[in-house]
Length: 281
Image 1 (tube, rainbow, N blue to C red):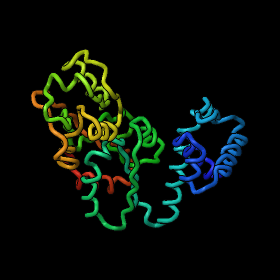
Image 2: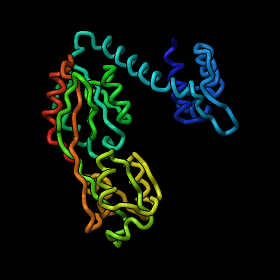
Image 3: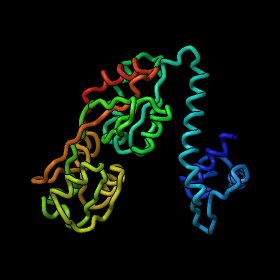
């Protein structure tokens, strides 16, 4: 199968617009439509419901998305293996969630420049369930996660911690008023959900519910409100605009490195972890 067909399919799914997908792929809208039709013909199923200003995946299209992502990642890995030839042990694929990339991990990764320039690192971000699948499919060598999956033949090493604090752009908010209006609930996993429910019980409906801390941060910088974000945001981003809210409990949880215990890149993984620890976000 032409790998460009899958790239086009995923871009249309991301933008939900043939014109914008065409711009991103440097193609004409007609070429994008032709590629999608060709893929549909190959699979014998429609992938999108096409209505005016509303493009949605069909059930078949939803089923194709994870397979298309895996195939593209596998193809990328295959190209790397061919290009590097005798240096196959000097490359590694590292992944984590969008929020962890956004809050602190890139700064921590600057330490990796201490490694030999012969080591090629490919960094990606995906939801936790996608990272788990990529680990088992061997398209990912190392993942940093807050809630590591229970997978046979995998190690889950505690490599640091993330400290969540309630922050706001309004320094007049207190422990009571922070949750009244403009509160953004960020989904930091099951443990945080339990902590939140135990500490605060039933609260007014948040103005925004998201699993991406970057979206919450963007909202706070544009509107008044509050959200639980990593403590590192106070030092690394907009320190003069964000304030911690006094009298509100913080939440700390461990950060794990997940990797295959018998990985052929185990030495590189161990070198990376030794350089990065401790990770504090």
